[in-house]
Length: 561
Image 1 (cartoon, rainbow, N blue to C red):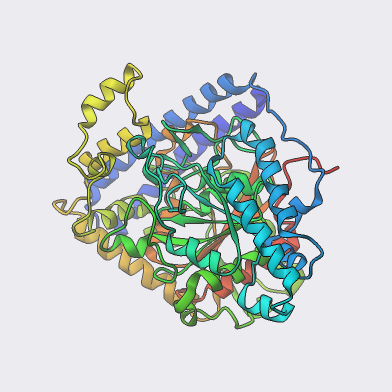
Image 2 (image 1 turned 30 degrees about the vertical axis):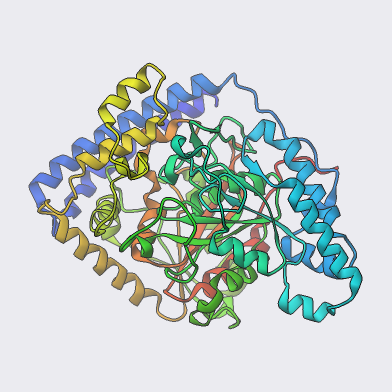
């Protein structure tokens, strides 16, 4: 990054500080105690902006001489097909399943030394599964129509994050003391996908216990962004999104309790869908969600192409598919569109990047030029308190294990302060973000004993109802997927609460589809999430298809020969 551009960004941060000081006056309209929040807001805002300025300068200096290692070029065009297209080609015998599976295995072997996204595999068994599929097809026992209905993804490989159990593979969830644990059975979603004929290929890297937004742990290390190796892939489904973006798998599955599908999909420039809560089974993944957390945690599809999301969601929803309207065709010309530019200026969150604001404006312009639709800008002041709302909702979960207990496999609890000392001397098996989350948990001011706790819960309910009424039966909301494009490795430590753009949607329980919108000036993906009302997943998926058509969707990070 040239010094001139750095100075421009620093200047914009200073301007934001002046603007946001005045915005603190709006807090009087909330139920939170005014005087205490006003001064706390100003203090936190000053600290956050100071850290932002310092971190941008430091990380630019650290990484400016760190060359990007380009991925090997694409020479096998099978790698560029969608999962849906591959399924058709396999069942019509234009391709063999073995040929497809071997193609993706070869690609993984090419890219994994650079990206470090795959952590365990069943390549030999996958080839045997593919050979069995090809034998079934040669037998002619089932017609193409029967196969399309009963085995819609027959012979197509898929991948999944290392928090889900895949029989015979390690299931670590990025936690050191789980490093030798091998799954004895498949998670529900893996079993369901196998039932459609799909073939599990491997499991992908995650953050420690899936509770941080950079995929790195002390077992497998850190995953690198396929567009710029010095940038993060997000978390916790970061290895999965990275592998898909790099053409190492046609599609896959992630889970999302604070943005763990949508953030990685955003940072890696692919599509990802967070379904309406309670639709897709979470059974068979670690850590186990309990109480109200089962509402916040969702499992959903990820793919380079939006055409794969709906058929995949229909399969994963299983017996709950009737609760959605996935067979109902949504006319994007007849929808109502709303957009929110930012969270209203939270003291804890980085301002939305100018290129992401421009990308959102381009969508608004496209809707007007293509269909004569004028999207309406809305302001929801309660969003400014998204961070405390999120932590208050987590604190409200009954009988949940603490994060420090989860780090000890629920067999007691780690001593987070002692682990910090060990970490300083590089002998701790926990990550720094994991330990910091343990500290944050202990210092959480939004616990049940806080005077603000019931007010924050009420605020969350009120905000949910406000958005629900706004969207109705035919509305969608264009909302930032994140405050900035993919930051440098470790930079999230200085922007810890930027995950709120996705996390707040979890506690509000709305479905949301992350959509790629090309690459920014730094060479990393841009994007936006489309939020729809409860059980109206088909609307956000329809808008995602429109945005893919209008803006090109996923951009291959490799040269295609």
